[in-house]
Structures are given as structure tokens and as C-alpha cells.
Length: 251
Image 1: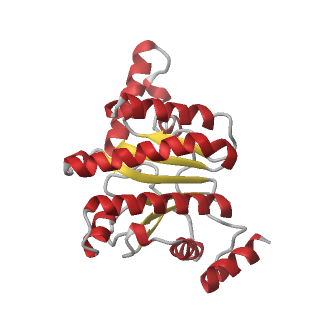
Image 2 (image 1 turned 60 degrees about the horizontal axis):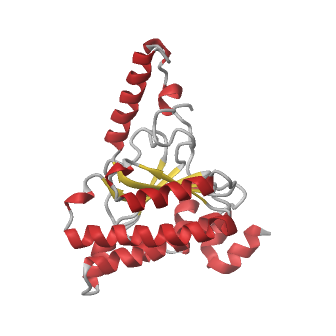
């Protein structure tokens, strides 16, 4: 039933997607907002507003078709170098989204999780994120993880420091460390690694995103800028993923 419905909605590309075997976890680098605005003679802040609305659309669509986990790179540890008005706009959009999410999460059965060092955010944003986490604990639906002030290297260092502290307290021993136990110290320790990582915007690099988690992820790069990354583009990425052979080092 789901397959027929989305084929009608999205045209021929949906006919290439097996909706019974979707990737469990999709990660997306939200790239190209500024260039999208520049091409239209608009300020970069307009691009971030358009990108924010598109995130809402794509996240809802992922939930509707049955994606269990969605992780997005919204603001990196390096993005603080951007112009002040741009950073303020992004944080304002985050506040708007969190306020709306608090009102709709239970109705939509969508969970939110935040990855990164949130301690540098304003107390108000930290409180809103905590409220979302509390609501999420009661829900069972699609888990959307938003990476804010996030860096993959910083995450690994943070995890190593946490393990070292547990060694000092006697909670664990150095010899207890395995890949599996180390993953529990990452921000993403409670969710599976991404099956598919999508990067719109034309760049072909990870940009310090989920460095540990993407060791065996399939990558999909597209020149389409994030505000223009439609449901159809998402289906194209999924169809491409489903034609690959994931051997994880085997034959």
C-alpha cells in the first residue's frame, strides 16, 4: 500500500524505491543555504530561512515513509566564524523550531535529540532542548537528531575524555575499551550508525560530520542546494542507495 501511494505522489522515481527496504538511518549535511540566497540576490539569512522550512518538509516526509532515524548537520563548531547576523538568524530559527516542536511532538510522535556541545548556547535554547528531550523520552516514533555546535573530532575527544574519567573513578578499566563500548560514549551512542549520508550543495567531503559513525555509510552527493532538495531528490538518493552492495569488508 505504501509503495503504491508514494509512487503516485512522486512520479517515476518512486517506482525505483523499495519502500519495504528503506535505509534505517539517513544523515544529511544541510549545505547550500547561502549560495541559494546569493543566486536569487537575497541575503544569506534568507537562505537559512528557506533551508529551515525545507528541513521541516524533509523530516516530516522521512517520518511518513518510515525512516526510523534522521540526523542532520545544522550548525558546526566552525560555523561560529560566520557573520554575526547570520549566526543570530540561525539561532533564532532554532528557537522557533523548538517552540513549535514542543507543541507538536506528541501529536506527530516524532522524537528530537541534540548532538554537540550545547553548553555554549543561550540558557533559553538549552532549556527548550531539554524540554524536547523530556518529551521524546515518552515517545516511540522517528528520532530526528539535530547536530548543533557539533564537530566529529570534538565528539571523539569528548568520548575519550569521558572514558578516561570513568577509568579514574574505577567504573571501568582501560582494557575494557572496545569499539562497541567506545560508541556508548559518543553523542550518538544510543542509535545505529547511518546507512546513508546525503550531502546536497555540490561539495564532496564530510566536513567533520559523524567521522566515527560513517565508517561504513554509503555516501550520496548532489549539486542540488539544500533549500531545493525536495522529496523527489530524497527518493533519488534512496533509490541510488538501494542499488549498491554493502559488503562491510566481506565478499
